[in-house]
Length: 234
Length: 238
Image (cartoon, rainbow over all chains, first blue to last red; front, top):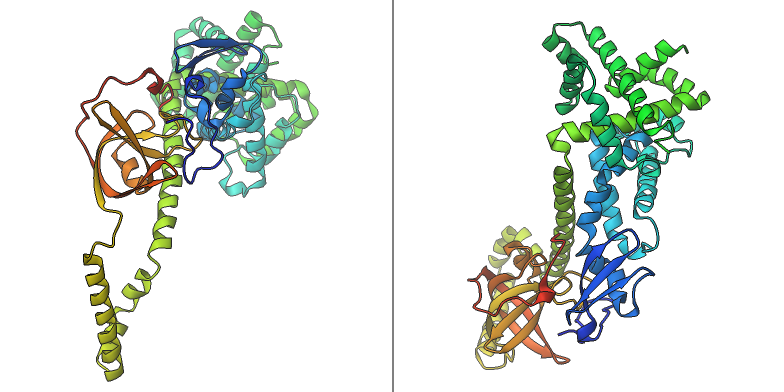
């Protein structure tokens, strides 16, 4: 029964029954197609049409495209949070918090703006708040390192090369590594195995494992620079 | 700090084995050397992305599932708090009655207490007899229908609240749930799809709308109804 206000509910926005948007069907960066109850579709590149004011509310957008946005931005956002100085074990937790905040504040998001940039702003504030908390419970690296990283230059991968392209280049670089180095990297990250455990597995000293990892990482980084240029991080 | 030492500390940081003292040494060089800062940042980004690719628990699907769970928990938490507040405001007298049960028994053993108890019993009896007479205009109603979200499915509100949709032949009635919302939420996610239910409670008409105070709610059989209208598509079932 659109058109009738609901008891006890704040600020109902009532639209004519045939102009209530029932889905944001397709969305590119600045282009969205809305579906309406009368089975008509409207595409806009310049913000929302007047009759879709409701889509600019949390409810309208929340129910349609948010999952796709999470999927699209999660990898780059997690990498960005790590580069801000989050501990590896807490990156996903912090990134999910960023998406929760974004979900609550979607009504304030300007459709013309870059969603990834908006997310990175939220992440930055979250990390700043985290730094003000008790250091013993911090989800960040040592404060002196986080402070050193906070130089305003961190654009994250989304500011340079897209995360998907970076992952592709990285996979290619890793595939050209000697088998043993590749295995070491895979074991290190697939189960978050530490150097001491890897040393037992490969019958090496922990120092030798650390040294091998160090050289392998450096080789991969140089390989990526060769493929994408030095400014891939933005 | 020479390059070798820097790489050593970088490796320790990436492997989570950096001591506080070494951390301070690394931070000191990072503060003064933007090239090394950039290198550290590149490594953090690269190996984070690599970890996402390698660790099954860190895949995009796992991350999305985690987001979905946290959003659902947040919404259910808000709903639970609302119901708790509602119950507390309804039943303020119950708490002292339970807390002082022993005190009641001791009071009844005294003559003054006995007289007081008798007067309370008489008042209760009078109230009971009054309730038996047809004063109660809001009769108990049984609704067989489905719970739907006023935001996701009905598109009428900003907040995600349950309503009960009852179809009888060609007629569809929407009852807006005023109380018992958590019981409905426990039956299923009414934002994702209509949830069949049988609800008992009291209905009233106010300002042309049907309001419903649910007393008991049970899962019901899927209602024999026409196929869902296209406006019921929910693309993001949080």
